[in-house]
Image (tube, rainbow, N blue to C red; front, side, top):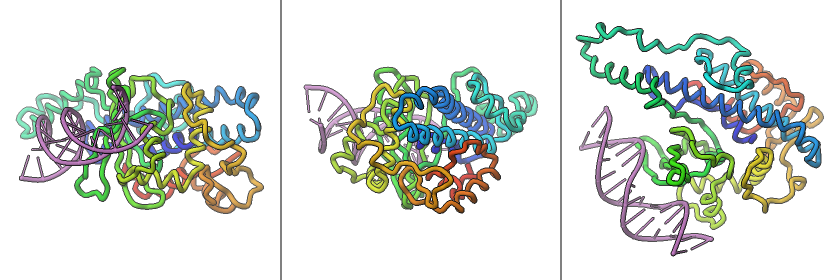
Length: 349
DNA sequence: GTAATTTGACCAGT
DNA sequence: ACTGGTCAAATTAC
């Protein structure tokens, strides 16, 4: 949950071209979906927090986990809100979404209405054909026939999104050093779920960053069934990782064993119906979290020593400047937020 | 045997 | 013609 929530903190619109009406619509819809998902997770944890604090032992660990997860989600919402100030109102989002989005300034939709350009003006325009097609697409979008549903984010853990995917293709993309992998929902044939996902490794950094692009919403109920797909787990178990992406994943798992473990913990918190990672060591044996103000050295959920207390203060100030609501007393850094702050390309999305 | 991945081929859009 | 996305037969793993 923490990882997934933090991933969403760098959630961006996938349309890279920019400057087009359709892409603005897509971007708005993408952000809308991202905010909705984060808010849903936020509300879920918030609702179950009292119960978990009663049942989980040790309570301190449960408290730390929940606090960090809530904080990560809260920061993600704040950051998304900040970077999309002209986001149109959300249609049917929950109370958390409304509270989070309405907390700040809210402007009218930035994209012009379809009626902004008159049909008469389009006539005689040498680009009337293109405009007509765009208008037709807008009509399809408005009618729900061709709803824009492409969104993506930059992440170090491209496989851990709670859904099960089946790889159906891989391609070398022009101008990139790494192949792009294509996935579709495992339940496409069973449930007709049309969700697809593309994973493109962006660089060879440590950890490697991946651009993950989703298309179409899930219509199945496979969410959170597995943090790491079974097929990926199988391949990792076998040490079969010739593919650049698989090897990258292997690297992530090998270098950050706690990441996989934390995802498992998050799974438990999510009331996951199917829990497949029951062979991991006991929580107490791992340094998953290090929170609080007394620590001189701070670790992220992967166990990285990410800095001293003073650096945490600096990071917190940066977040406040970004508009994040750091209203959680158990503040600690996490890798993804760190990556977000370091991501110079973020503004381009 | 079943299910998932790999990879070259095919197709549509530009 | 080129490129990205998908298909499907072959291959691999359990």
